[in-house]
Image 1 (cartoon, rainbow, N blue to C red):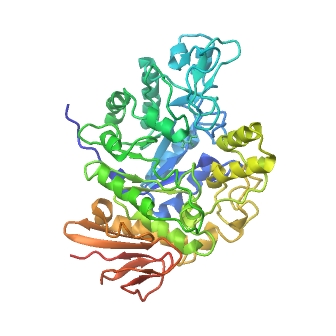
Image 2 (spheres, rainbow, N blue to C red; image 1 turned 60 degrees about the vertical axis):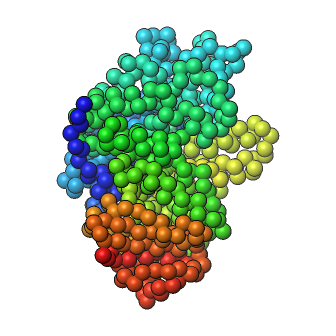
Image 3 (cartoon, rainbow, N blue to C red; image 1 turned 180 degrees about the vertical axis):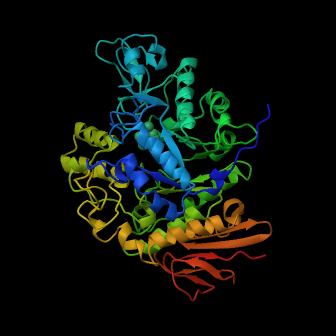
Length: 544
Ligand code: GLC
């Protein structure tokens, strides 16, 4: 079969991820909404992003904030109406911005009519994974990614259903052709409305070995590795390409836990099209202490390994932060002493790779993790499960809260900091999650008029990326892989080479740098050829 060449706007664009619940509330209920996104399109257009990835906007009981979907072809009333979605798609288009929908297809909410039918023993029983227990216990030893068992036996049922995530998120049985057809139809529904594609949630685990055998180590990372790339994954994705994506000018981005670069390369091979790009989980396990003394070499190696592994034929993405991770500056930077310098250096890294960069909402301001003080302020189902399991294992409140606080995804989900007002300009009323108290000084309004702000720097980086195909397609090479602190790499395109130098530590570093003039930096000149200041980032002009 021959495939028509696909447009490559998604290689050239910068993707901006919006967590709708936390971006902007115009309806005054403390929860962000679709009209809030439309309202802020001028801000996003000014930033220069070309694609908005919206975390799920579909009907959902919101136990996992939309990743527990109860109807794929509806809009969650909490976020607005179908008219609001149509308006957003149309208004974004006027500004050259495409809307991507995040869709969780490995599982549905147990409130989905499909699951309710299955539960009642209807014709959709086999749309989910039902198994008999082993001597009354779960059918296998898999643990839920969020903690606890991955099987639940509903009251009155004699079988267990599988849920890799919360018990309210039942895994769909992709072996069923009817399931796949229903999914394809849901996706076409949205593409026909004009969306630019999808971010496919945990797509690498949709195909399971039907014998669902025990795993040696049931913790999240090994479990993902065990299931990912299941026997029919390629077949299911090729079918999805044929039935859905091939008919539209759209992009398919897969969230890809459990796969290494070699397996990922197959999923994005243009000669055998399945997905257009994926993003990996190799950075997920890294949680250095902010400003701490950690070895940057393994961090840098991840970028090199993925660039090499996917090669020039496939296509990479750079996702260093999102709604599941701590804030980029809090994890990998120094949110205390070098907040501004380190945020800018990390954004330089994200925006100068050979890969589509993803900027998570608020990272362009250097938003930080939130100092939550009360367990009641947390919302994340994973954090709450962590707390409950700790308590059940005998931990006292303080210890269990500390464990939840260390991993809660709520850090990335606090309301967007638009200004220094009572609710940070996010809403007129108390928001669903606390606003980070640092919004008094850290906010978009404060940065808007400041040429030295992180916001201004992000804009300059996005403009730089769009100004020269070297930044999109140029070959990547790490010049100093053995340096503990400094990341120096080149991008080479049609005989021209540009150098990026990043000091990823809050101390002076000795380096050797080219003579080419510096186009962009988080410090003022003069620029030494043999030293970088703490968290200094420089982009040198390309030369022959
Ligand atoms: C993905 C999402 C995460 C969600 C999980 C289950 O990892 O990013 O937010 O909880 O899948 O759908």
